[in-house]
Length: 460
Image (cartoon, rainbow, N blue to C red):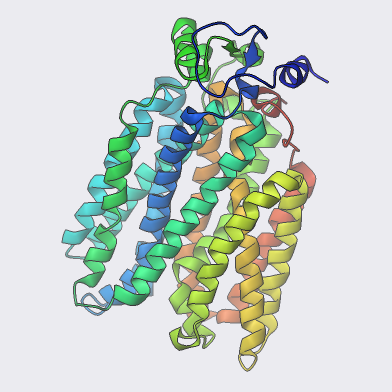
């Protein structure tokens, strides 16, 4: 048992809210501090962001179907608009991830949502597919920054006992926002000729709420400590966790190493860097490709709205995300990841082989895929923050997100073209091959980070 583990076991009765008097039990590491109201606040701010991001991405599928009646869209523009936010996330996660490791988490925490809010409301006024595409890129740019810094800041504040649950819950809240957008789109996208404008711009409402609530968020004490701003780091810890809580110094061993993206490819981190980028890419390519164009896919396999298949699948997305939290707590990270890749791969193979005359079988295969995909999507919020040290955590998370969104943007752009030219079944088989690659990469390189402290988890 490590010294930190021994301390945690001995000092389990630490107060759950900040105090100013020293504890008679002695110091306790920030990794082992009990969950308190401040943790809940930070989690709420990041969860609200992910709800907004899921909602903003979820509006586009039904909005495009309605928009095309005013502005006819060919497969090229359908793919470009559908993937534009993902391209923005690619750029934003790289730029803001790099800036966050240098300027701090708090500034990017605010700036990212200022961009999202302004661009979301501006969608109401677009007059061409190009204008909408550019605004969606800008929304994605802000999202990329929030993904990178949001995962980092919550990981750096969270105790290890609850870190997997909190980080994994990103996916649940994101999914709820995404599904709500789908439901609104299903019932209101055709309510009037301009309903698609209201649907797209409605994402600005939760974005504005999140932006206002984030004002006054403190800087990450781990980031401050890593920059040598020890007094400021201690002040944050004292205010929000109490006088008996200390920052462990394990990450100081890396302080002499250069930061930035090149640090991610040094010998001690390169395998984790490649793993996080690869598994993330292989997971999100089929996710975004399929669910960005869910109405198109259901039409291709003759499971239209009258069958209720879209409502059932959206329900599976939420249910799967909730199950994923429980599995993140109960299962080793590697087992959960590898097993889920296997199940989703087999599900898409079955979907590609079943004839259109077997709608129940197709619904079952699609439902299993949806349930499992939504469940293990929780791990995209868990693995990257746990795998990188503090001085490059936002860069590492940002790079993984950037690679994933570049891959998913390409996949989303190609999906309507693939269905149009290769057919639905061949396209699903190609996506199954992507999931198979993800499983192989995970078997070879996925670390087990379930019971480690944040600094141990980010070690070589």
